Image (cartoon, rainbow, N blue to C red):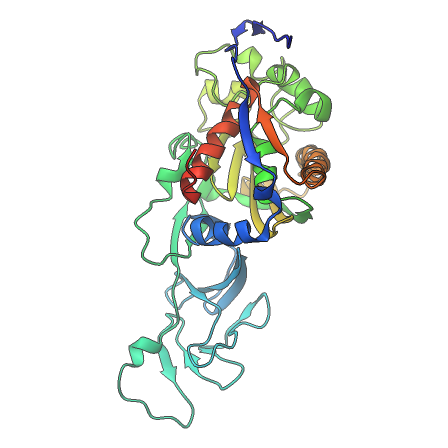
Length: 380
């Protein structure tokens, strides 16, 4: 008989009568399923791209690969962002050869020199005089929106889906953090040898935390019991959310930058506030900085991850500012997660017809699977 606790740290636990089924292994291994995901998810949902201060001057551009598609973002003459597929309307050459750069004035195709304005409108076709339906040959746009100093894209240019509707638990949770003012103090990008869903599944449960994240579990007492703080009642005692004398998620447990003055006392005490924006971003807000992580599938067994540490620009301008306690702590957690995510992916491939099981400590993961099944129109 399988034994389980009635409660952990005074929190009653639901006693499961059965284990919930996970997704079959094919959903992490089959390239055909990834192709379906590209169409159903990665071309229809909002996704984080970059901070709004990334491009400095009109004509500056940056290329992004979203699933199996490629787009570029350009800053126009009015210092507004515009996004387009990286394809000339003539015969399909890429317009941006480099991953980033600066257009001198117009967007000029490197193949036959068709030129477009920074608004995507076709301006000129060398040695060709076409007087009808020029607007039909404008660049193919993507939808853009902003939130919290971030730029987001949706490859469906006619989407009616709002970014805010996809935020869990909601867009107002981080209202007291000065997100728009913050600047990137450090950024790292790396590739994991695992399916993108494996990365999310690991993030969404802390069943693994006591063994895999000893340092993090010392900071958050509930993690020592394999429990997540995500769904705790707001009135639940703060000491379960963060250990005594802990100010921030750093190697020392101390805040390294001035605490954001706009936070409530409760927001300062709890130590961490999460927001998820499926399928590609989550944010963890602390009293002195914010860390945001985004991901993109690169193949059925490969995922690119980018982590950014955001600080007040006044703090970053201080020559004595030391970001390393926050960066080293976050990097350590990501390194630990990388190891187990890649172990998970390797194990999924070990048996052709494998299907896992979810315990009552993995309810957030089960909820993510429900969202995924809805996206993919999988009947259960």
